[in-house]
Amino acid sequence: MIIVLIGYMGSGKSSIGKKLSRKLRCNLIDLDDFIVEKEKASVKEIFDAKGEIYFRKKEEEYLKELLTLQEDTILSLGGGTPCFGDNMQYVLEAKNTKSIYLKSSVKSLADKLILKKSKRPLIANIQTKEALAEFIGKHLFERSPYYSKAAHQVVTDHKTKKEVVLEILSLL
Image 1 (cartoon, rainbow, N blue to C red):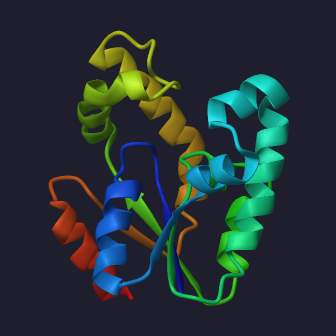
Image 2: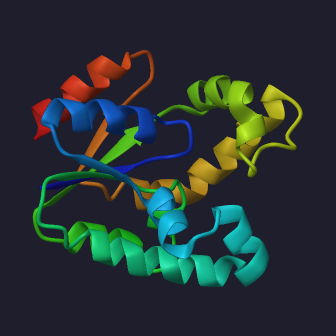
Image 3: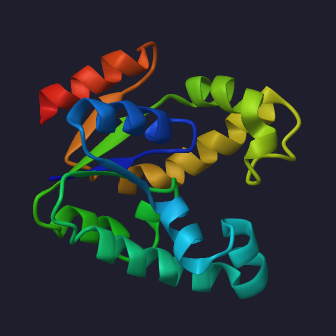
């Protein structure tokens, strides 16, 4: 089975994915890391050199490839991946795949991301937590229709990573 983790940046896709892959003894693939490895360039370098359209085409191509894997895998998508092209439809229609939306509130995301914003190019220049919360709220409003199509939703607010992993396991 391929378990596809979907959610906004800071929702825990990477950290929950690591714990879940250890618990299930299966591979963890981060789609952005996979793209970086295949393209031999960082996401920023790809955007700068070839543009967003090129990146999104490659993202779709590699997503389709990964959705055909036969071994048990946790696949963590970039926060924007489900919102471009037919990517969410590919996830929903893929055989032997479960999609899980790690749903976090704007406040929870802003509290986490304000501490790590220097490592996140999309939000690095946002100065205050209030401005960050506004930015996140706008993005979530735009992205929620895509995220909400996931087979399951797990609210992450006020839960430990272990609790989220146990909830995901109960859904499987």
